[in-house]
Length: 107
Image (cartoon, rainbow, N blue to C red; front, side):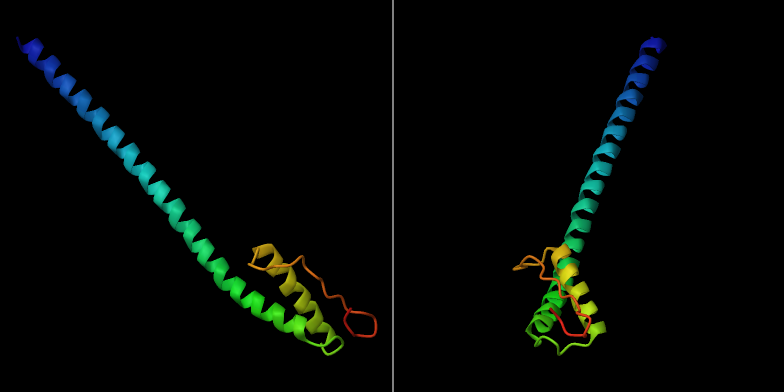
């Protein structure tokens, strides 16, 4: 009789162990899924903020008359265009890369 009781108690412990393991795996999976979702959301929001800044800068530099920008500013404007394109900002045309000419004006 005690063997039967011990077997039943062992079966209960086994079921409890399996249940605890499955619950832990499920919670870990939910935590990993939430972490992935939250991280992607934060990255998307960050990219939106960067896009608004890059679009503003890029539009201002594109509106500047050719030859009015200093050579160092032209290099910076080119980098802004590249970053805007790499971020995939909305309404991004194919990057028109501004290149300084030897005389210092832009092409």
